[in-house]
Amino acid sequence: MVALKILVVDDEPMVREVVAQYLTRDGFEVCELDRGDLVQRAVEHFRPDLIVLDIMLPAGNGLDYLRTLASDRPPVILLTAHADESDRVLGLELGADDYITKPFSPRELVARVRTVLRRSQVAASHPPTESGTLRFEGLSIDRRAREVVVGAQLVTLTAMEFDLLAFLAQTPRQVFSRAQLLQHVWDSSADYQDPATVTVHVRRLRNKIETNPEQPRWITTVWGVGYRFEP
Image 1 (cartoon, helix red, strand yellow):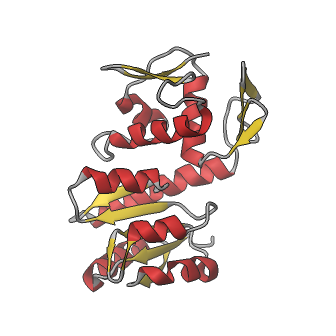
Image 2 (cartoon, rainbow, N blue to C red):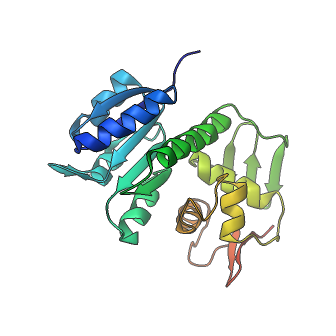
């Protein structure tokens, strides 16, 4: 069986060493970098299945390098030493799949890596048990092709954005809390992942499918409870 490849980008040698040790022990092939400006080249040549990317890097910022990666890049888990929520939210808005705050348990990082990889592999293999297309007035969601059309326009969504939309749309008007969405869509919980992850993905999704994201037609907020899809 071919080992999955993980690219670890962090300027702290001890962090890279420990992370690489645990990932290698868990069966992954690891490539280490201490500079963010080499990430794109490493993605092209090493072809990682996932990137672990530190936000604070010398001569640059991990978020800046995240911006430069192609849209078809592998999943990204951000490492951050900041407790400031703004960095985490910005990372998620730029398309990061998860984040973990330093100091962290290497075992937790390995578990997060496996969870994100499992989600991305499931998405890539078109796994939905429900077949067919969900059709609403002005919106269609093809779960087999993983395509969304708004009006006559094909809309490009990330894997998690599509999973979130499809999950909400398959049970219209049912309200889900952020904790429930973390459980069902992210296969996670608030013990391991900030519920703000859900908020950011809803915002990104609205920006892509709603005519007016400030007054959403499809994904509405039920204040104090969560979100629901309006048919």
